[in-house]
Image (cartoon, rainbow, N blue to C red):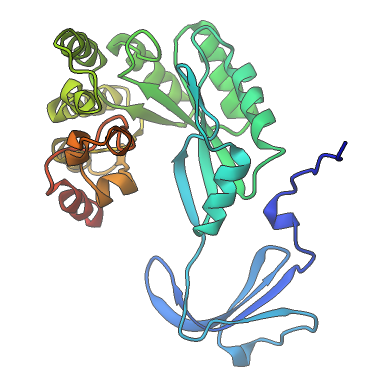
Length: 329
């Protein structure tokens, strides 16, 4: 019988703790410039001209001539080994973060999603037990507020004040599973504001989706094409608009996750202008910028199904460019 091999985080796998990168073109958020970089124990110690640094011996040197030096990316929205329905996300915290590092992402922020009536703290501990032995990069956690009660209110205070969680995700979709009503959302946002934390929201009208899904199934529409039909663009935009208003009523910062349509993007942009950017933030996905919802009509089921996500990709082929322009603003 073979001895199990313990998976060691990738940043601990090398004994080499001093790296010197020379002759590269650095790309930061504000400008690009040519400089050398010296890293020790995983910390950037120096960025500047070669003449200004004395490099110690025993350093691993990388010649980046003709190459770009880009800071590691942070992915703020991942779901590693997430149980959802009768399935579990195929990437666990080892394989998912290993792939992230290979692609230049050096930190992820994953989501703890408690079951209804499950303790927030117990769910947090469960996610930590999954992640800590496996991760190959830095990680943090958001926590989903999937039901609402006094105990949940108390526990998110503990999560924020004692365990370092300062972002909490709510759902306007997934009726009967995660969805909160407007009254509950107001209470949640008010509590989050009181903790100086950030509220996140999956913005789709879950009541409309549930009714549409029932109708489409009765009509015999069961393929991937039915996914977008059940939650069309206005269903997302309405929820985004409502979420922004609810958050503003209690002065709570709001981060709208995965904005996937023109209409929803416009609602985020309008809210940011209306509230002078104080409260509202939005994200979109690489998929929304790189492809579109016309694939749901593909006759190859595997291809069409691989494009299913919520909110869905939109069939309007001009959506990716539109969202990219919103990002640029």
